[in-house]
Image (cartoon, rainbow, N blue to C red; front, top):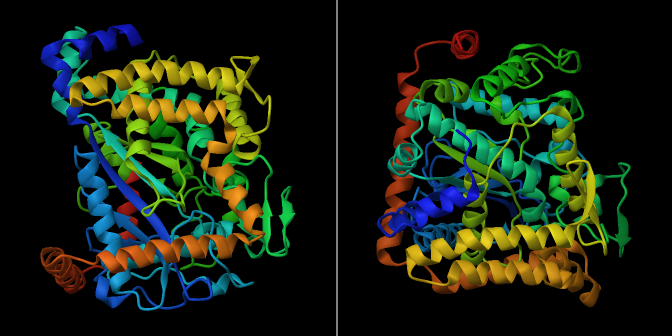
Length: 521
């Protein structure tokens, strides 16, 4: 049944239910390059002191051997999540020698050639080979430089028990699994409608080193000898310089229903694409438009934890949506771990608003409008008087943002009641201030720092990263933390060895069995 913001606000406002909002579950995955003392991408292997990148629960790599990914456990405490992310950083810097965690989304200094960016390696198992071959394919398809861009992925869910209470209160005749999945897809559709607001408020990538483009055409302006920037840009990472693909521009993924979502992604994975048929065997997983689901670049994804060997689409078909993954958050170089509690509180309120609010199905025209709005804010978000499209009409960004934050503020007030706090409402006030004064946005602050210091992007980001690393080193690890990370290191190494020892089939057999799952959906 259709629901309204008022109905769901009323549901969670009831005194016996307010505590349910304390049960929001979240996890953070934060990517960061390793840079050498000259702010150049590290050419060294993933530090052995970290443990196995394939099996470590907290420290792995993404595309490159030099692209770290820090992962927090699922938690219903913002403080616990940030404290764990902080601990991972403190451990990492203690083991990195003279290398630095590059605390920004747009990359450090890169060489001229793609071969200067080492692809991540995970060992000799079939799973490891698949991970590396997938990354080789990405390099051939999009270039390795694009894959050095870092971001923060924010995983969010309400426990099944909370959604079950909502299901009962709304007298839904749908099976609970379907009801939960439909609600998450409604959240996703609304998120896509309003994601431009997060880009405006938290975009922290308005500039990039000239070496990233290496002579390729662009619309950016020079800022000194080594830096390019957009005068009103917010997050170049989310635009044409970032995770975009000309081949994927004709890929229209439908978020109106799980079946449609699965069918369109499945087709992209199982249908060969002519642009990729010439890539050598062993240099990609397949010639499909997408090798696997992860290759689809989207600001948000529906997710479910997979079982061993299971494909993500198979997990969704089996159990429905379990949580959503927000993928449009930049690493803020001014913050020690790239994100803080104020930002998380606003994101939580924003996501709940997207869940509460009516979410009509999208059509192709609406999807095109959503994409245009996102790119407009990416490239021109701080432009005075900027207008966005709202169902075919133009509307000033500032006016629309103020209205949205006001509505999100009503959700924030409920979260404050649940936590006996005013921190969520304060976060909304801080975001509203950015709408009234564009100079308060991270993207404006970063450009102001570059212009004031007459500095290059890579000097600025390196100095910020070094300062954060200095504080991490000074604070160090407790004896308990040191013991815990040492244990995770040894356990991960043993787990990788066990996987490699138990392997019994060839990689071709393994890959064939993997792709057979798509045919059985």
